[in-house]
Amino acid sequence: MLVSKKNKELIAEWKKAKANLDIFKERESKLRDQIVDKIFAKRVEGNNSAELGHGFRINCKQGYKYNVDESLLKDALRELPRGIKKKLIQTKVSLIKKGYKELDEDLCLIFDNCLTLTPSKPQLEIVQPKKEN
Image (cartoon, rainbow, N blue to C red; front, side, top):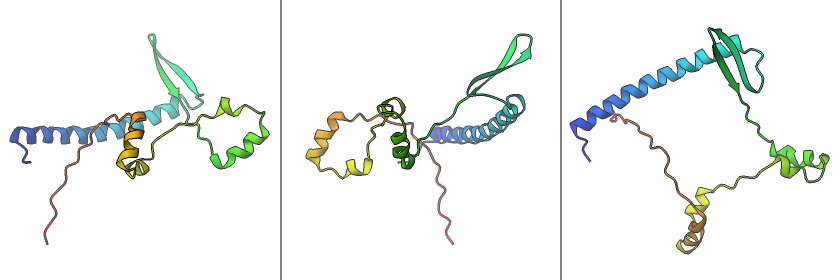
C-alpha cells in the first residue's frame, strides 16, 4: 500500500511529536526525581505534601510495588497462622498465549467462551530502507 502525500505529512508530524515527547518525558522524570529528593527526602508511602506559599501546595504520592518471592512463600506460610494466605495472596489467572495458539479448532471454540479479546494501543515504527553496499 502506498501512503498518500497528506498521510505522509501526518506521519512526519507524528515523528516530530514522538521525538519531542521522548525528550520531555526524560526531562520531566529527571526534574521530578530532583524535586522529590530535595523536598520529600523523608517521604512515606501514600500522600506527602509541602507548602509552596499563597495557599499552594505540592503533593507527592509515593507508592511501592509489593512483589512476593514465590520460592520463599511456602516456608513463610508454614510459620504464619492457618488461613492467613487468603488475606495476603491472590492468584491472577492469565492466558498463556503460546498454549492458546497451539489449541486445535474444537478446543479453541470451547475455550473462547471464557476469553475476552481487547485491542491494545497500536504502536508505530518508521523503518529505514536497508543500505546497499
